Length: 102
Image (cartoon, rainbow, N blue to C red; front, side, top):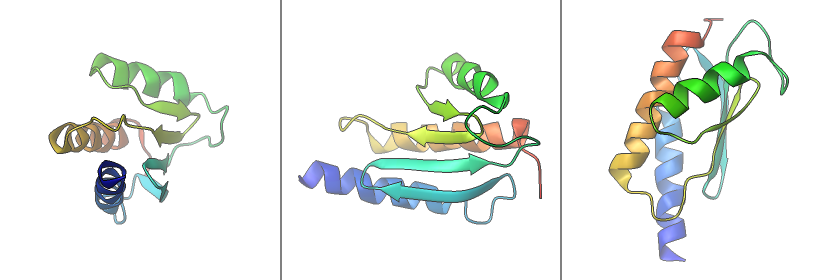
């Protein structure tokens, strides 16, 4: 239970990085599961950006579940703080590469 609470807190802290990021909106978390919306020209679960995002993250060795422009993060309980930071760094990079400012 302690590990889950720690991971939940780290997820919440990681999402705070995106509060003022113009490429993202609506970041949220429930326990250890987090999601955030990438601002793109098309939105929704069937947006064409999804496969591009999937390939982007796989090239970096990361398993992120993009449903359209929505990134879902379901990290394993054994993830380290450094690995989680690396994941959020890659998400920030994805925003700069694929995102659109409002």
